Length: 288
Image (tube, rainbow, N blue to C red; front, side, top):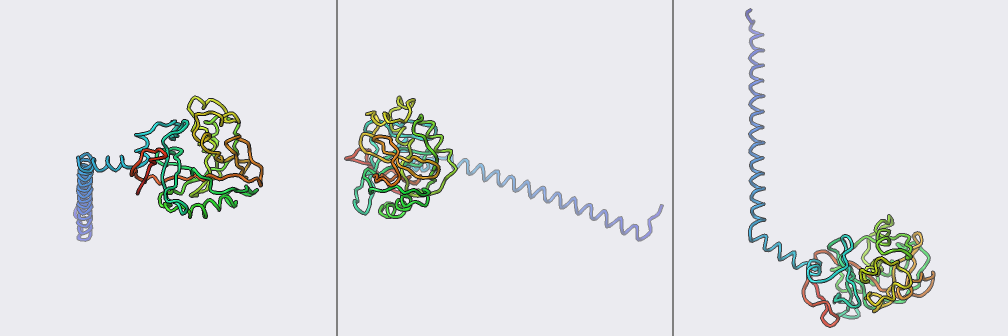
C-alpha cells in the first residue's frame, strides 16, 4: 500500500517527534546524572572536610567553650530527664554579672535546662512586692520583672527569652510529678524574667529527698542550697492567678501580702565560659 504525499509527510513528522522526545529524555537523564554526581561529590567533600583535622578541632574547641558544656563537664548535678540541677548545701554555682547597682553582682545557677539553657537566680531580693489578683501575664509583678528589673541588668545581652509555664500546682506532691505538671502547662508565654519554679527548689535537694513530697518539712533539709541560703519565692498557681510560695515555710501567700522577689532567668545557649570556679570568692564569668 502506497502512502500519498500527505501521509508520508505526517509519518516523517511523527518519527521526528519521537526522535526529539527520545533525545530530550536522554538529555534530562544526563543532566540528572551529572547533578547527582556533583551533589555526591559535594557531599563527600563536606564529609571529608568535617572529618578533617582543621574543622573538627575548631568545632570541638567551640563546643567545649560553651558555658553549658563547660558546666556539664566540670560539675556534679541531679540529672532529671534532659535537665541538670545543682544540688547540695553549697555547690559551686555562683555567677558574676553586671547590674546598675553593682558591676560585680552575684547570681547562682539553678541548673541546665533542656540540655543547653542555663537557668540562674538572683542572690539578692529585687524588691518587696504585693501579689495582685490578676492574670499573671498582665500582673504588675510580671511587668515589673520584665521591664524595670530586666533593664537594670547591664549584661542583658546574655539573657534568653524563654517560655514561662503557668499552671495549677499542688505543692503537696512529689518533685517529678510537680515538674511534669509544670512542663505540661498550656498557659505559656515567652518572657525574659520570671520566678523560679517549684521543681527548681525541689531538685536542689539531694536526690535521696526526691521520693518525699514537697511539703513544709522539705525546706528544713540541710542538703538544699536554696533553702539554706535564702528565702526564695516559688511559683504556685491556682488557675491562672499568680500566688507566691515562701520556701522557708512552703505556705501559699495570700493575695496582697508583701513578699520578697528573687528574679530568675535563662542564659543564651551560645554564652561561653570565660573564667572562675563557681565559688562565691571566684565566681564564674562568661562572654559571648
